[in-house]
Image (tube, rainbow, N blue to C red; front, side, top):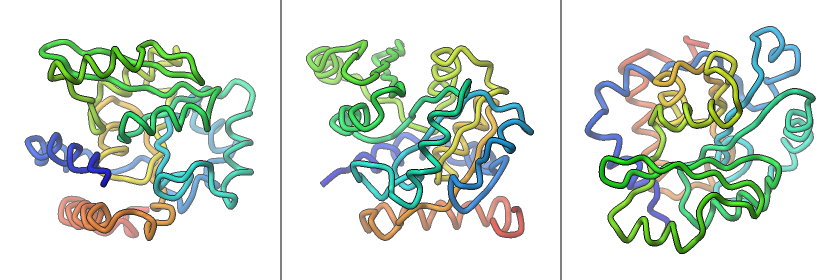
Length: 224
């Protein structure tokens, strides 16, 4: 069973009070189809940092959902628009994502003691070998997961764009939106795509996140 979400929750719990204040998105829409060239031009967006599962595809699928693929392809090919991917998935899925999106950098970071190690994989080109990552984890390192501002600052440096020209697109308040707010990046919150495909425990976690949002910020519908 994939338990990456458990690690995400464990890393977030000590900061839950602070993070709950960072859950309000800049923009909302039902799907990524709401992100149009006119929208990007209006808000001076030059780069998109993508969440993947629940944002452009069902949980751990191997391709953008057909209902979203045309719009996603148009965004990925839009001249001058830069892209990166930040996912809380496990190590094996990083390789899968890089095969699905060979022209988009998949970004990752690890904490080893007091050091932060940054990783960039694009297609088959990776800053770290599989052995290096295994050694890092064997030495007590851990993947840094959203919400963490360092991830979006890494994306900003990778795409050579200031944070105020980026847009974080994702389906989760406590990971995608909070990460954006912590880093001074605008966010676009979409509804979780095919939530029925997510593991039951993860859906329960998402329900708790939605409840926390309502307590702290009110009804999401009222805040649209």
